[in-house]
Image 1 (tube, rainbow, N blue to C red):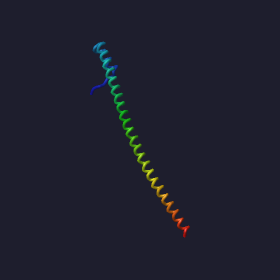
Image 2: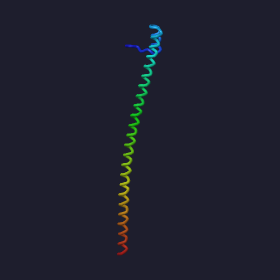
Image 3: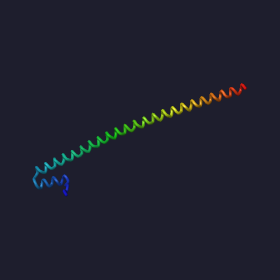
Image 4: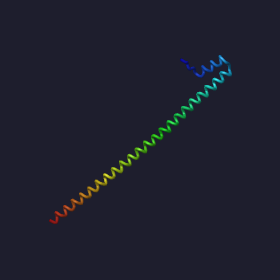
Length: 102
């Protein structure tokens, strides 16, 4: 099993084994690897946030459409109730009008 060393340990080992140029090369290589890891993670997080924003927008649109349908259904039901109430009121008015003539 390979053992991973830290950047400082790698630079120290390169300096001890191969001299200053190898240590500087190891330091630069480590910094580049660190920058690559950080930028990869940053781009991954940006992509994830963009995807989550798109999903949130789609969910909001779905909820808004559902609410609009619900409001339309409620308005239709209310209109039918009001129509029934007017019809019943007119029917009762006619019934009382007839009973007065008798």
